[in-house]
Image 1 (cartoon, rainbow, N blue to C red):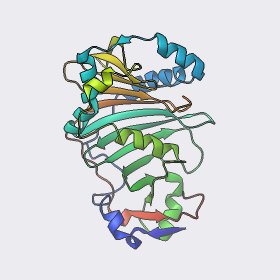
Image 2: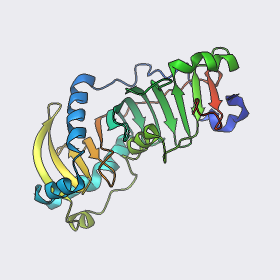
Image 3: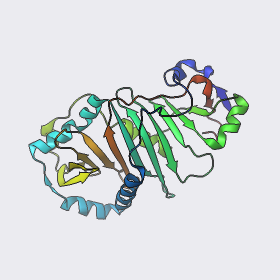
Length: 274
């Protein structure tokens, strides 16, 4: 069910160019997990109300944006791109069956790469670490190490193509990777959105922020002094899949995936290994 990564060397070479498993090598330091997780769980729970309740709440929230506040929204994703990298903690509901998934790691927005520890209450063969780029996900699953090493002694990591339509982990990764853009948005267009609103002033991890609603399902926590986004909250259309991403900008973040000799690729026909 597994094939050597060398079967597809061009695809693997871009990610598997650094030493051993999915370690952060001191370059990707995590956020305070306990504090952030408690906040994230509370936010996720609040985001799971009925669509009617959420619509009523949104209609009553905040006030229209000033031009300066609209400018903060317009530049938030662009500033992430200019910063290039960040440490993050993302918390999301695992799916309709309940449970949560938390990713703690780093992202390089210019290269569209990331790496994180994965904390979840999933069943057997669960992923505990992941690295990615737009075309590959590299997973470390402790429950599958023996099976992997029967194919390639010393290997520890499974490489697979992303499945953003069906896999919750890949959907979370897609959100994290998309929090940057090489161009600023148009301030005037943001001012014309009736659902773009100022919600309140607040403090996040000791920093004063403004909480701004970008649209009906998306809220940004932005440092008004630097324009840097420090938290992103959103959900899907049905509001059944909320996600909270806490961000610490860090231009020194570099992603260090495992070398090719530690990686095998998953056969799509294998239910267990995919």
